[in-house]
Image (cartoon, rainbow, N blue to C red; front, side, top):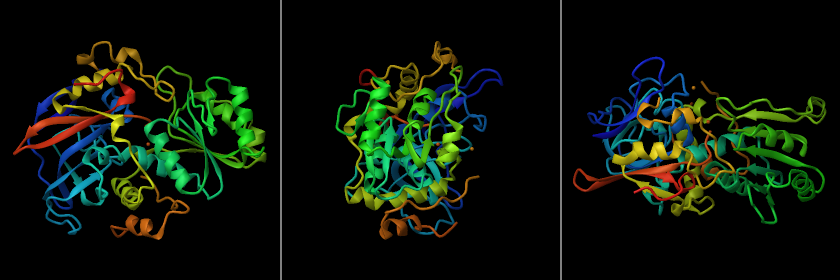
Length: 401
């Protein structure tokens, strides 16, 4: 099968990406072989391609998110899926790091990591749900969101931000949209006039301050500023932070944090197990089917799998339309692309999710810095079956063909 592979030639240089032909994997035990229809390129995929994750083993096929069709079942699957089922999933802390990911024609995944594509949803959209929505779920659940609270989403126009906005609204929260040039009544553009916008936050929350800040941007100055308008017992959830040479120091009033019982919570989807990722996605399926959650398909640009290495290069080069909520990548990693060089515990369930959704989260008996990304595609092969790797349009200045 055709695949995009990360190859590390030595211990010093970052990995390089190469299009390769490798044997189609064979599902064993509880694994299911999925023929990929769509797979999102997330920021963490790009970081992985630059050698940022010490746990990644090589050679390795990247790609955390995917949708596709069940092609073959392992010997000990539970019977919840059959050949031909439309499925989607995400990575947890293994897929694309210690086991091969979805930037290929096929991917083998444990049955517990899969969910059935919501009725009426295209494979393209399903392939872009994973990381953005499991990260938004992780952040809002860890913040213990409650109906009637106020939530400020920084980077509200990104993939994770957009997911968090929808899920917070579904949970009955009042949502403030933190984004560059956001002019709506609930919009907060802290990049334009910080002091005025902080006053607006206080005005919108009737002087109390915001209960939850969901920070997808990871800018220390921005985070420190919103701490000034955090309500008593308020929570700041971080899903992103500076890397490389950028300063990671963030100053805040320690006395106020103590007196107001405020909390700062890190949320890293890369610490999730693949089953936890699958549980969250199955919980969300009925919400997509009822239209409570939506993904705009036109946000994504189709790119052939055969051109996936070029798509990575363009994205890492930083040619993005949306710079307000994007992470900066160190340029020395992309001057010559050909030389380019995660146990977690169960979390409390989100308030106000319906019993139906909770039942979906128990589909199998028991037991994350992403903001925007892009999908990928492959010409028809094997009897006309096609796979698409999609790339989020906000990362590129023009469509990739």
